[in-house]
Image 1 (cartoon, one colour):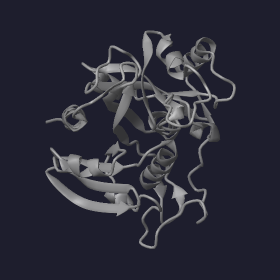
Image 2: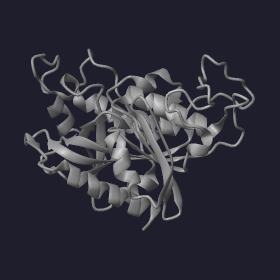
Image 3: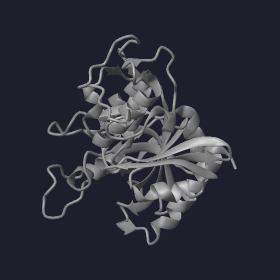
Image 4: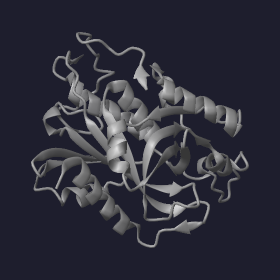
Length: 300
């Protein structure tokens, strides 16, 4: 995904648009530019931040504002920030824009910097498998995010030719209902997907705008679309299947593409939706996933 247009360096951003706290930190994340590592590991659950940072050689900064818990430190000489995003693409919209502001906006002058800085952003999440042959406690790496949310529709963007082919194939084959939001497609960073995908499942991740009916679940409320999950499971394009459901990747990939960052999502499978199975010990799988990411991305 690419931007059609970005705000140019020299344009001053007013206080109502670029909101800073009294200490000069960015509004929601409560971080200042010096707190940000070149590698950013993002997790949904604030409790997982310490699970990762306890592996660091040293932690130099800790902060918390609302659900946005952040630890920055070093691991084998590499400076890393671990950040909890909370749940959903709406939170990813906040997180990606504010991470980009820390990296690429002069907060004192309130203007974009002339030389952009590219962050490496990796989401370590959990997901539900949409293919029967993907067992719980294994890992899925997202080649692309199929956005069933609305976030990227609000940004001036264009899809790459490969993203457009995938989007067109999905619209044609999935018989997507008119009463649901129009999907979009955003691809992850090819190098990171290849690095983390080796030995793991790689596929298209359906990013949902909710956890229950938007993922085909029924409690008391009845979903408006019958067979939603079956439509996703049956889809295949250029050797890729829709492997899993989660709630952040499409916005992560789309906004990273727009803003010039490298992004990848890896998820531990905690449920197989077709087999109606749930992990008995997903914490152990998450621990293994953390070690895999640190080993492959940072090095042991």
